[in-house]
Amino acid sequence: MIVQIVLVILTAVQVNSQLCPSVCQCDSEQATCRDLFSDVTSMKQETFDSALRTLRVTGSTRLELQEDLFQRLNITSLTFLDLSQNNITKMWQRAFYSLHYLQELNLTGNSITSLHSQTFYNNTRLERLSLSKNSINDIQESTFLNSIHLTYLDISEKNITSLHADLFKKSTQLQWVRLANNRITNVHPSTFQNNIWLKHF
Image (tube, rainbow, N blue to C red; front, side, top):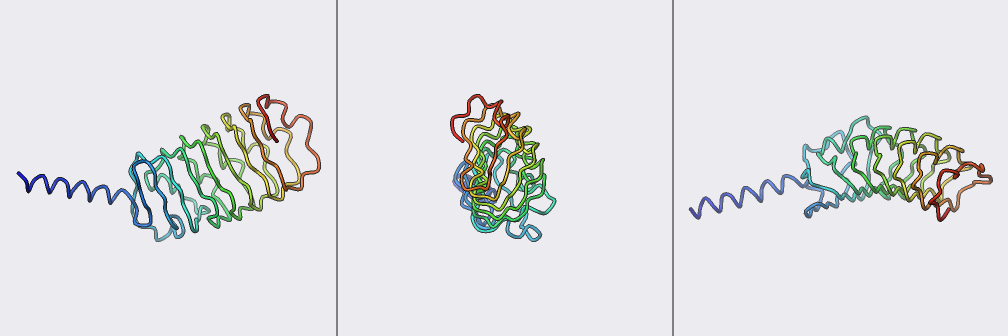
């Protein structure tokens, strides 16, 4: 009987260890990883527990390859994703497509030069988004078309010269927009006309 109990415990420990990739530290619904997506082509066939909600990644990340990495790792239930300072330069337009429950995304301090208009198309629950300290010079007018719950947006410290008049047309819950240290010289009068809750920009 004792032997059976020990075997059950050992099996449970082994299963738990398999549900946390070797480059990560996992704790319940949270995980912190180093270089998780740095070399996608040789990525080990490791997965997370499907209950994972919070993921922080440090080091380098490659999101330009046409593959849904979050679905591959069984972490489509994320609500928080931190990819700040990950040396990201390009992102496949469907990089976050499977993250239907995502509420907060931090892409601060990368080297992203452009955003596809459908990058956040499937992230309809997104509330907080930081794109500051990148090299983006233009954001297409349909980029936030489905971001109907967006309340916080940081697009500061980039090279943006102008904002499309309909950029925030559907983001009616928007309360806070940070635009500091861009090269914007003029804002169209109708840019924020649908954002009645906006307190700071």
